[in-house]
Length: 450
Image 1 (cartoon, rainbow, N blue to C red):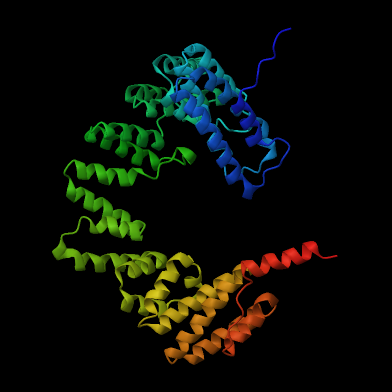
Image 2 (tube, rainbow, N blue to C red; image 1 turned 90 degrees about the horizontal axis):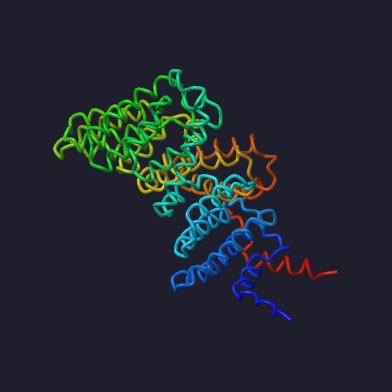
């Protein structure tokens, strides 16, 4: 009688880690994937220890298992999908180390990509291109080149069109080829492909990046300029590029054209003032001219963007100027600014400019109330408490009274908020939200009571 072959002990561990039949919630997904990663590491160790052939079979079981598990997990975080990508590349490397045929490996890869119901193989081409050996890569690239050329045959004699004006078989395979060329730093192939279809701003950025990495700065700049020109000609959707302006400045600097860099940075700052733009601008200002350009930057920000003005003043500690602006500006304009910017400003102003800080805290509280999200009411209460304290400290109690009246008039029906707000008005401190311990003890009583 033929003896039954024993199961690989690691296969049992894979089965345990996947836990079929058990649904994995969003909150459990991190821990679940961490266990899968621990299992993968044990298979990785086999490859390092000369057992690549054994590892290949186990990787395949784990890959298949992850796919089977796809409907038993809330993978909103994308953790399982990312793990699958890493696992897939590890499997390819193991096959290569085990001496498996390149054409067979590539066929398996393409089958997985074609039959990918759950999107685990989405955008994986670049990772695959990086791990395939020379023979495998040539076959992988040739597949998509053939696919593209076959789909493109009816359009060869026509003038180039925007990539999305072609059928899906053309633009999908062209997109994959471009990603592969970028990974392999293959400028010529990328250029040849762009000659067949209209180059987009995104193409220009990618080609410029490849030239920049090769230190061909003049060629890179030419493609950046082309991309910026193209950007103005139409709406490009996901083929638009937001990195061209910044890349242009860096390339001008590399080419020793500091005056042109400065003009570009200043022009960009005037159009879109920001703390980042301010930092970029100041990189090119001589120390003796810093004050002059600092004041110019503040003036431009003040004219163009209240948010940027507040952020830059907070960054540079221009509290006097900021205080004056905050006191004069309308409440609704302050309420539109992100709390990440206003909170920092309020903290800085609170030391010497109580009235301005109080106004910001008041608008931060109002911003939360207008959004109506009760879980943030505790933060609104804290903002109002600080506003009241600072208004009184600054001798502007009447402004605080007006703010209180507005809250009562507009938000009196927010019952989970208004009671605690009245405690603040009368000088009492509202109770903090339940502690973790108190909350879980209540749950225990609820779950164990009749």
